[in-house]
Length: 114
Length: 155
Image (cartoon, rainbow over all chains, first blue to last red):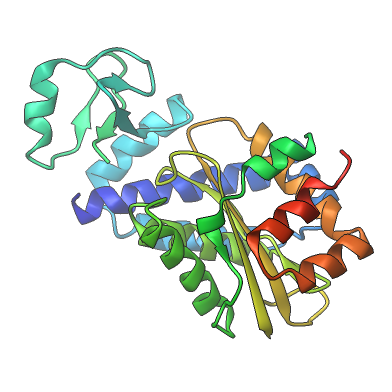
């Protein structure tokens, strides 16, 4: 896997964490368990730092997808896109050997083979 | 969550009864390395990065010698729990400032719902709030005893 793709996946993990920390219902549930969620600013800073390492065009593409869907990048499981559950064509898997980030032809999400 | 469901998340090869590290990052690294060696994760870096970010949101060391490092990542395929125990204690920035000796590391896939993950977390926290069970956990030495403690709870 290319380093920029690895960074993109780490960015998405971080985005989900930020989203959950901002989500009142999840954060209240975690706070009721005793967790203190006081470091949202630190997470935002970590996001900025991580995002700055990703090529702008790739970042922009990811952000557009993440805004539209919950997740802009997903792993391929079996021969399915885990975003829209459409079967991927055979040609997809021969292209996958190039280590390029792939795109689901149906939903447009970025896909990678773990 | 029923006790038998809770117990089903624990696996013998994901229990570390002698954690060696004394500092937060190295303790997390030791647990994550164990998960990689047990082939539960394919990329340690994703998990370490996510766990460190989660700790910067707020320490998961809740006090009474217990911590619950947790988070979601695309690098996780299914809900995974690692139990670890340190006899010397780890400086884990816990809320009461005391060393942490018991760890429940909980990792969940980010592409699925949070319900089971939060329910498991909540149930485990409920267990350590019971002083008698907490004392037993501090004394636990092997997997069968751990399962006995966790399986003995009433939901």
